[in-house]
Length: 96
Image 1 (cartoon, rainbow, N blue to C red):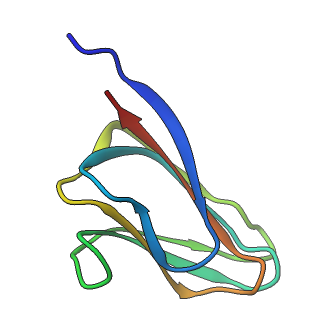
Image 2 (tube, helix red, strand yellow):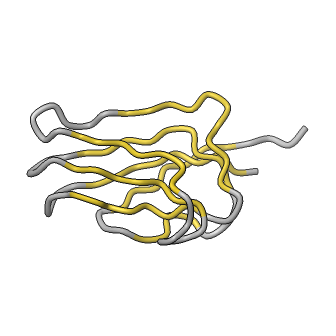
């Protein structure tokens, strides 16, 4: 059995978070100055949406944990649908 390790990736604008297949175990959105909606897509800006998370800037920072990991077959693309200047999204990925 291969050992796996987890590492975090943070983005403040839409773009590729990791350019290879992986599993996402955690997803957090920080809405500091405005409400924020962020999609995780598999395969780039036009790939299928795997998960959407919305953060209200009054409550901020919701986190979703995927116990077995959310599988991305091509890559992980983080898309900010709505967000403020100070918004960010963080994911944790499992890697061999």
